Image (cartoon, rainbow, N blue to C red; front, side):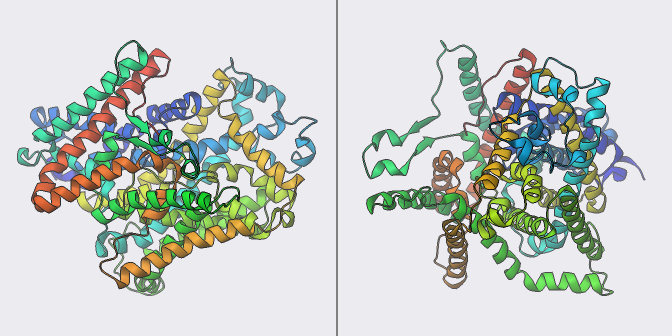
Length: 637
């Protein structure tokens, strides 16, 4: 075996080594941005700009190798392996996944006061093997100006670090096994679009050494790249030096609707984020239309409620409707693929060999889902939960993750989320907090924090990485092992960086843990019964998705896509609806007057806008770390 042949399966030692080498700096950036400074929040995005920036650096260096040592240059499969492993590591480090759990580990003991009676409510039920309660260890953690590497501090946190890292690893492994089960159906048979894989795929085309297909030799790409870089440089310097001019990126139409009933619509910002327009352009046209149109429908619900005098708090219950919609998406996806899934089960229990090319055998994947589920439920039981509560929690959580993954495979949105209406809230709404034991609710506090606002979920990234593997020939049987290895490394690294920065600054992100225990305190102090409005709103969201799906299957002219409803209702989408509208209008004009060829010619320009903002945004982030102060954030949401 000579030349590039030995590197063709992608998952090589040098690729894994490079991915792991990039992991610490990315984890550090995520914790610094999201928890210390509270800016950028890269892991709330559907595509990580820091991972794209790392990939760009590797591609540029790899171009030099093609000219000097072509036999040693990285292949496209290797570059995408590095990107895949890095994205999994970054998603695990996110503050909506691991960091929020870490925020609760020491809160119950440190913030207990005679007024909140936390000592009586929680202390007897917080598991010692998952928490820290030694004053000598907690003092530096919350007050700062200390060093985590002190022997007392390090050994005080070691046990919970190991257990929570294992918990996160098993959670992601269970999701991975689920993606193996759906991989063939959603990638090879249905051939879903996966819009978010376009950019890394195009960027790595240079790895094949064929100049005529090089993404970076397209003039439209560099036009888009230059425009957005100039924009971010202008606004970035204006952020640091306010006397310099800047270009406004948003305008709120709400300022023109100050009287009833129009003021009930809330904020209606008009933003023109170039990177959102670029990410939205590859999205199918009907999905683009559905997103911005259904955003107006959500605003119409607020307007209608004000016109007829509805004074119910939280009307129209968007968070609960969104929860129901994602559960509906999961149900529809399972129902439409029931026959292929039945074949997977038959293959697992039979002697068929049609799964030899899968990342793992179907029998192994199904066993992995069951074994992972058993571990998570038993972990929760040992922490103090009832078995029924733990089982219900993870069934709902995995169903939401399944719905997220389906949306990402078809729509590829820049963001997803459910605000304060996760599995824990649904269970409490169904049975009421009165029927749940104090031990169960206390053990659920860390779970509340990492599902309070579900924006960062690893499962969609796992499936997208399998899509990258399918397009570039990566050996998926090695890739999943590399990704799981990266999960454990990233979880442990995140814990380490989080603690090091906490001992330096003092209690970073502690408010998240305080909020979690405050919610549990309210449920214990003022027990509630079944929450009928919550359940009705959840049912409405589920019904809208089911009815919309039936209409699309029955009437070819039906334009609204069910995936647009939960995305358009999410409160962060109010800042993205106008870029989606611009992308829809441009794509509609392009396809109508120029056809698919014109669309393909223009696509590099829009991807260039994304790459330009991601590169400049990463650059400002690095400058901020070096200077020790906040810098310009291009996200704007």
